[in-house]
Length: 141
Image (cartoon, rainbow, N blue to C red; front, top):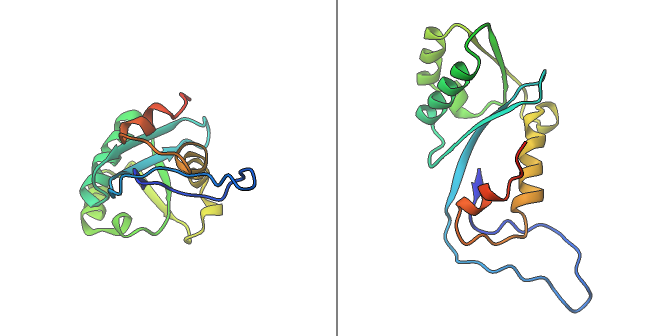
């Protein structure tokens, strides 16, 4: 989840010149779903306002469309939405998708490195007046 309010992280600044990051105090943001193709490095993502089973299923539809042939194995954490009854019913209808669940450890899931980079290099210690400005500041792949 990427929040529009400031994500402050440690950083260096000259003695006596503490860095100040403005804020407007609203808790807006976007929820991101993403997959990293371990073989090609290609990233497919979808952003939105919600982070629930319905939004996740919409993302899964995008994955199936992007990869129209063959079996798709997705490595996931144990988030509640990944185990939701609605998602399990979807998997029964879409047999090409298979989920493998990892323990909740960011070091084991490669896509977590992408989220870490996004936060550290694009979001931390920066004020964006509009949320879409975050998207503008993500360099193209």
